Image (cartoon, rainbow over all chains, first blue to last red):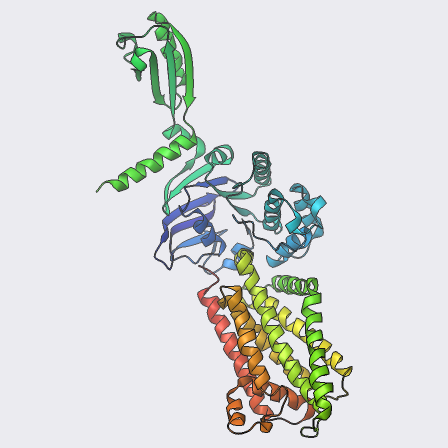
Length: 314
Length: 255
């Protein structure tokens, strides 16, 4: 794939204890996208990031970033990759300014105070530049980690659970910052187990479980393929049986005939409109209408549940 | 694959800054300790001791004291330097950076060795307040101190990677290095020991280090300077080999 900024194939990691954290992962990341890697705890998200960033030695597989093989030409590739880890781990006694400047140097870029200032200002850390990191709040510490990862202007940024344990207000701020990065052309790969986050942010979503990628697709396509629309119509008078006029619709009666339940594929709104017209034409009165589109979360839960059920079979 | 001087410099600078941040502890403590040794062994007891090989006792113990402090401080400085990032998790940044074994070593080990040289200078200056002495071969002395500082910085680096607890980090310097240095002729010449202890003392590698440094100071030694030098270089080579192995296999660094 020519437009892939990162190309992973057959990536496998078996830890010393025998745990298979990654099991033949194939994944292509496109330039400029926000890619969300979604999966339950222990699915292999962090191991996958670790393998690309050099924290984990892969057991098998190849990874090509910016056309450089990460196994051999890792210096040139890593200089263009940034990593924000999940844990708030930084030198607590260092000042913000020094910690961020150090990161830039570590990645081999000559010192550039104007650039560091830009990064700190964009993350609202400028006022705190001379503070020791231990004096900062949790949300600020996380922003320092992001600043450190951005200090060498990476083209590909990994964010491992950027909003884990972050309150609602800060989470929104984080989303805005990630969106801003994308505006600047940075490719972002984030892991999360907040599906809402993936739904809001991502262009494409990959679902990983037990070290295997179950599905990768555009978020919109995934929602369209797997999503569905449900409508619950509360009837004025209970129906004993489904009238003939409604037989063509995917509907069923519930609650002793007091409710009519519609369940269709995504984009079912037009069909629901037709359904309501059919109801009126058939002289069936209704007092309430509730439409619900399934979210990425429903899709995710269904998918993982289906996999688990499949495994249970002999 | 190209070496990144900026990366190496970034680590080196940061490690030195870290030392200055704790300057009180890392510089003043050894100075105080050495002063105490001089007062007790140099002035109080030393005034009643005969000269050894023509060197006044208080002056005789300078190379040994220097070695004692140098080994303990260098090893613990260097081991802390790499152990702390492992402990706090900040090592992720080092591992994800485009730097290799050379930059890491120059940064961490170079900084630890630099600190040791500064410390050596401070100790030698402190000594002048207690005793008059002259270094016979200053260039050799400097070279030898640098060699020891570099070797034990490497050794400390290995220790910091090997240790998986603060306890293990402290065990080697406190329970092995310091006793061996005491027994290695810091406060006496080996031939002052009765048989079989003077022969047994030759199984103590640190005795050769102390002896070597003493030779550069006063031209007298328990063992030939060539043997001391050879042993130190051998130790350096072993440490380099172990570190090369660590980076090649990712032992205790990369899962």
